[in-house]
Length: 487
Ligand SMILES: [Zn+2]
Image (cartoon, rainbow, N blue to C red; front, side, top):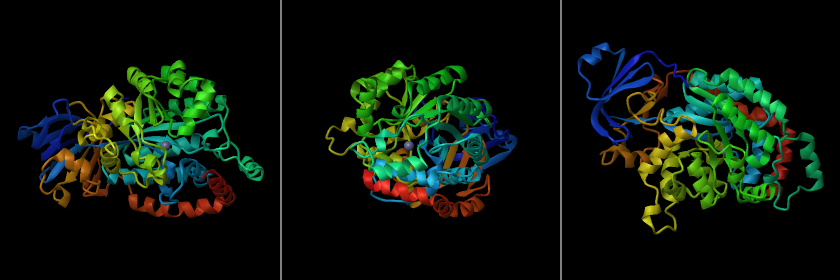
């Protein structure tokens, strides 16, 4: 992707800098020169450079870090945070439909911007949006792309598609009571589209929007392989060949998905994806919990990425992904928040902290624990790989995209700085993010969004849930009844 960025030059002077480069350099007082959206220099710059810059930022009491990457979210669910507690994955999936059905393109735009506001204010500069929750058209794609264009964030819009049934979210017995099944059928919240329809929608979207603003990618994204026909999955592989786009999917999030796939394919989902030509570096898979060691090796060999979503996986009781094994075997892993309704937030700081803690439980072998440095790699370069932009951002080095965040070292959790990486992962929550820069453009300054009118969008987002509840009243009633049946 070509970076079409802010032509202004910016000099950050005298800041603590954690580069995350190959030499793992940490500078206690260094400079960063940004030119035409890229990093032009890192280190001690000559004083005359200052006069030549359009803008100089004083880096005293600031820590500069690469911007964080949220490699798996669902922007339509931003307004749904706090909608429920104590629901399992099946029940959540039904409820999402009532909250996301029949949205207008403006509502799609506003909910995407709400997600962006939360991410920007907590130091995330890039995201993969597995969009939307269900049926969508070209106007909705235009709305979500417009939001990323206006927000200034770097984004991968992964168009969520399926042409089969959501058999994994039916009750454990396999079917709903007759009356309820008839009501579901009538409202059909998971109505699949045909392969020709999806082919046209995806190819039109890619041709129109992929590469937009030099920051936005578009690609096909099966909701889950087992909800898609082989014809649809092969279409995704064709698109990789034809357009050099990335494919994103949910994979093996729940145990029942692994069983259904085994019955469907006579082999594992990962092997089936490999047979269809999808297991390449242009594939990233959210969750990937119910996977065996042989398939982890196959993913490592093929260069496909995994996106770990620790908050959502724990809260929906889906399971614990074998991340230490994946890292040991060489799988590239990114971090995601998942939708706000299943995780409660979009702050990748929380996911980073959690990933270091949860894999230590019951594990006496410390070599299997995830270090703060590994968590930080997942939230930066690992996320870039999962967004199909491997090596282009996530490091503060010459030639990298100028995506970075300045944190306020006067916050109590930074006083004193003993180990900037440890404190960044374990102590910082995102609240200390002061200045956020993407592609050389300043989007947040003094902890406030300056790139667009966030206040009026927050106000508009206030009314979205009440109007969805009114509009989809019958659907809410049905999915709540289904929710009780599948818990
Ligand atoms: Zn998800």
